[in-house]
Image (cartoon, rainbow, N blue to C red; front, side, top):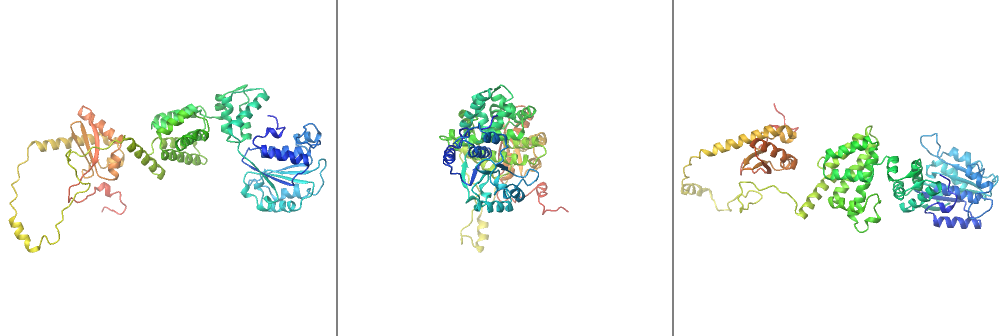
Length: 545
């Protein structure tokens, strides 16, 4: 790529360009200029072009590009323009006081050899050590007339206020993606290769507002005579928006096997796991913008995906679920930098995204609660049926009611008389012979179902199958009613993947389709609460002798 030859070639510097041109024409050159902006925003290029304009022999608003001074600047051989940057041989990557003294302090008071000014361009001014800043400050306080400094920095807060107060400060902003795309199309036309418009827009979005990054990406793809979106995807190691959407569809459908299979295909195609998660994170970010700002979301999204796809994803996810998924990806990307196996880290992240019940984070719980609230609003919640002992029209309080005698209603001396007046209890009737047989049959069926389903259950449920005080069940027609102790055990049992295993085992045993339903186990009034030995073993304070 050719060097920038004019101020008009620098994007996003319209006001600054007008000011510099006017200063160059009138000869009002400041002694120190501070250029502030993000990486790749054009600070160093602007500093080089500004110094070329000042040293140009024609003294115009733009460098003539023909005189000897302009040619020397292009070749990096001008004796009156000195570039200063971090020391490459040191791990700290800082500008030491030795560098400042050797390049500036020793030659600052020597008149320029050829041009009207001696210009020092300090790149990454924030990396100067405290001693180097003090050495530079001594020269900035009383600079010679022929001396000029151009400082460039990305972290303005690290530059001392004593240096900032002696500099003219100019800021460089991020460039919009459409402007970068048009600029890339112009460069492709000058260089003589074909660049499709959609490919230029993709490169502009990947550059994230930096023109230098956009030019580097274009240079990486310029080996081909025709550059389209597929060429950019192949050169950058990206998955492409279609495959990213397909992967997200599998995640939302909780099809873990399909997601891992698609990820393995992308891995075999040479896709970087970190880049893939970054693309998924960008897709979720655009979906979140469409969710929280549906009217102004088009101006906030990156443009990599069409609005119909984003609106479809936004309708399937709540805000809490989007935030939880993005937090999971951010944590995975952070851990991936220190991981020796990025593929495993990416697979763990994808499995967690497919099933948010695997984590115990606060954001995960919020996401699950938001899903329940969404189902309640839409009326799509599947609730467990009422226990069989409760009649259809009968209403019972949530807790057993106990009747207490009013004060003074029962006196101690009245107890014998009241006991004597009570009628004799009727003689117990003999139980029907069919009841024990049915009870034994139900218990036998439950035991066989437990034996079939036990290997498929997690340990916390499997250890309770033989404890009727915590978990029991019975067959009633085409239903298997499972009663679990209230609390954590009921929450674990009353899940679709657990109930489906019980249904399959019962259907196989009975030879017909059986549907499993779960309800909370109702303890009899006055019955003491007991715990099984297996449950007591989980407490550290309990010791068996």
